[in-house]
Amino acid sequence: MMLKRKIHITLAFIFAVLTSANAQVEKWQKGIVKQEFLYDKAPFPSCHSATIAETPTGLVASFFGGTKERNPDVEIYISRFVDGKWLAPFSVANGIQPDAKRLPTWNPVLYQVPGGDLLLFYKIGPKPSEWWGMMKTSKDGGKTWSDATKLPHGYIGPVKNKPVLLSNGNLFAPSSKEGDGWKIHFEVTKDNGKTWRKVGPLPENGIKAIQPSILQYGNGKLQLLARTANRAIVEAWSNDNGETWSALTKTTLPNNNSGTDAVTMKDGRQVLVYNHVLPPGDLAKGPRTPLNVSVSKDGKEWSAALILEDSPISQYSYPAVIQTADGLLHFIYTWRREKIKHVVVDLSKLKLKKIKNGIWPKLKGYTAPVINETKNEES
Image 1 (cartoon, rainbow, N blue to C red):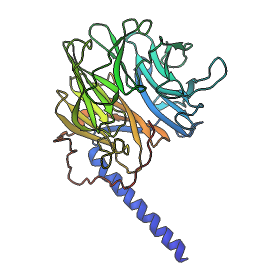
Image 2 (image 1 turned 180 degrees about the horizontal axis):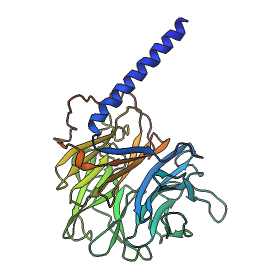
Image 3 (image 1 turned 90 degrees about the horizontal axis):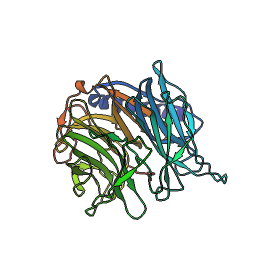
Image 4 (image 1 turned 60 degrees about the horizontal axis):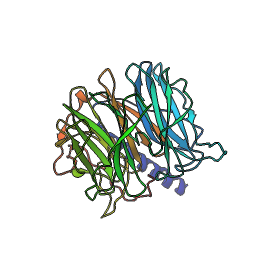
């Protein structure tokens, strides 16, 4: 009887702590319109690396799922948002080769061509240093898909984050390599993936960076923001629509060696989603929590806007963000490697607080949870 009572008290305490923490993070979530998982049950235990696009027929999301990242059973899945809900995900691509050997698939990226097809880029290979790029297209908002096309030798398409259509008609795909060092480059097409050329790799300046995003400022001015193994998000700038770039330099924003994403909004402001946390000690990699959103007018000075997740139970990672035609922001990300979460945000309802010296600002009534343990985070 005493043991049962102790268990009951312990469970009640845990519930109270979690409830209190959840109530606190809501102070940083004033602009959230909706948050939901893409599915309740799935034929795979693990998932990661989500992407989202708005099509003429509605939202479409993609991610990879299987027993575990890098395992040969990992496939690319698609989920469509129809009549107010996400339909069950279905497999759209796997890594089965002509000789029947099976390889893992990786990092899908969706892009809706204005007035055209929905493009799906993904990778196949045993590991990132050896993968290659594949592409499929859909003419009906993700219901059905073409056969897969292999990208030209040495091309992988956008490595994690969405391509950006520039004012000169170039579709710029942010990309990177992880073999002989970490290097950022761009893969450019003017005909929606029929032909390609490369820009880069960019000058490294002693920085190991991958998985960039592209932001636009008009008149050919672009900014990239990227993940690093150097404990900070890095940037580079271009003034000629991405044909040449400055050397990579660290921003004041921290990075835990995990993916980020960013988007230029219709009003010209920039939105960045990332884990605003430093790895413990002098480590290059750390827990992937919390998951934060910041906003900037110039790409230099950033303001805290939102905390999507703050539980010490990692990980919340590999986010993607788009702005839909109605002006709302849509975030999609890995939730503890178990599910994919979708969050809709009305940025006009958020109160921004300036980030100074890379430190997330304090908010009355909110205390960040303490992360006591770290675990090995996959790529």
